[in-house]
Structure formats: structure tokens, C-alpha cells
Amino acid sequence: MPVLAQHRTIAIKPITVPTDGRDVELQVKVTAPVQGAGLPVIVFSHGNAWSMDGYEPLADRWAAAGFVVVQPTHLDSRRLGIGFDDPRFGTIWRVRIADLHGVLDHLGHVMEQAGLTARVDPSRVGLVGHSWGAQTVGALLGARVFDDAGDPGEDFSREDIKAGVLIAATGTGDSLTPFASEHLPFMRPDYRTMRTPAFVIAGEKDRSTMSTRGPDWFLDAYHLSPAPKRLMAVPDGEHTLGGIAGEAVAETTDTDPARVTLVADAVSAYLFDALDVDTHAWSAFRVAAETERRASLQRKD
Image 1 (cartoon, helix red, strand yellow):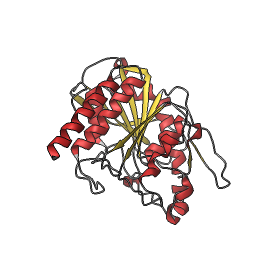
Image 2 (cartoon, helix red, strand yellow; image 1 turned 180 degrees about the vertical axis):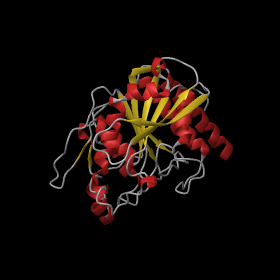
Image 3 (cartoon, helix red, strand yellow; image 1 turned 135 degrees about the vertical axis):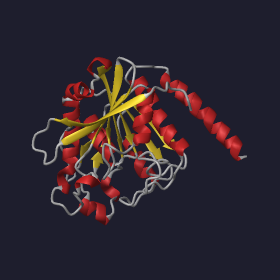
């Protein structure tokens, strides 16, 4: 689906982001086009246990399209060894949110360390997250977390963020399994206050082991949040949507490079439009995606 420019890219890591009260340094990886100026930025929040080194199929394609991609490593990364039974785990969801705030607050420092200060447009920043990362991003877009009494918690939203993308985002918490209720009580998002424009991407065959509901659980972020929102349900997609976390990683259950490309290009097109970089990108993407879908159906026949 070659509707977006394809630039050569570079990656710089690790860059340390200043933080307060964090046991481990907050480090990020930056992936960027080799050339170009006025570049928009994507800050990406990874899924549970991953790190700044994951999701290369997405980060590389976004950078090739013309974005500067910043990927922090959150405390739940498997390389840090903080598991479900660690007493710190219960507050990691808050640290994740603080990580994104820290990256945004020190974006100038990150770009300086990456040698990209003169090439970035700091007024055009979009947030993207997958799975737990999607719930993390949702908090900065205005979603809150219900407490034990059923009241919405703290507001972590930012007015300087124009748009975000939630990929395989946690649904409401009324159907959590006993394990999730015990170990992941923060998986109770309240999307009614998520007013920032957003694009919700879900797999048509994504079934979470944390919820008793089916794939519709991942549509809650779209159905329960105020407009403007967009939705893409990926045909036959499961939780890793073809392998967005990496090629041939063990947790991918629906390996399909074309599906990864679809997700990556959909995000690029949406953010180009939402951030006023290219207001024709979204319509061009939709035409290309529909053309590819029809061609795929013909090949199957």
C-alpha cells in the first residue's frame, strides 16, 4: 500500500530523559528520517513487557513516512524484571503515564540529544500506544480510571496533544477475569472524558485473556468516548495485528506482514491528517486500502 513517502531512516539510542522519583532511568529510542524538516513526532507507548527496542515494524515505517518516533521503555519491560507479584507493579500504570508526560515535557532535550532540534515541529505531536500502551495513551487524551468505589480517578490529560491512536485498547472493567481483577485493577478505563481526537484500531478476532467478553471489548474506546473519533477493525486481526511488535516474535498469533503494513500506514495517514501535515493523506489511504482489499478478495477467488 505505497501511498506514503519512503525515506531512509536512522535510529539513536539510548537517550535518557530527566525524571524525578523513578527507580530506573527513563530511556528512549528515537527513529527518524535521514532528511526532511518540520517533521511531526510520534511518541509511542509499548505493550506489557516490551521496551524501546520493540515494535520496529511500526517505528521504522512511520519514520520512513516522515515522522520522528520516540519510544520510551516503561517499568514493566521484561528487561527490568518487575513481575505481577512485585509490590511496585500496582503503581506501574501511573509511572507509565508519568513517563509519557516526562517525554513530552523534555521533548526539546530528547531532540537535542538526537541531533534533530532544527528538523522537528514540536507543535505537531501525536501519541500512539498498543495494548497497555493504548490505555496509557488514553489517559493523556482524557480517559480516567475507575477506582474501587466506581468513581473516575485523576485527570492526566494534556491540552497540547492534538490527536492520538489507540491500538488494541483495554475495554471497560466490568468483565475482567478474576486474575485481571486481582493483579490489574487499573484496567477499568472511563472513556467518557476522552475528548481529544483519536483513532481506535482493533482486531476483528482479538480475544483477551483478561476479559470474559469477545473482540467487541476492544471497541469500547471508540463507542464510549466523545467525538471526534475514527475506528478501524482489522479483518482477521488478533492482538498483535499480524506482528506489529516484531518479526517472528513468540506472542504473534496471526503473522501477516500485510496486516502490519495496513496498521502502520493507517496510523501515519490519520496523524498526517489530524496534525495538519497532509490533509489528503487519510482519504488517499482509504482509497488504497479499499483497492488492496478488493484485489485480495479477487486473489482468493
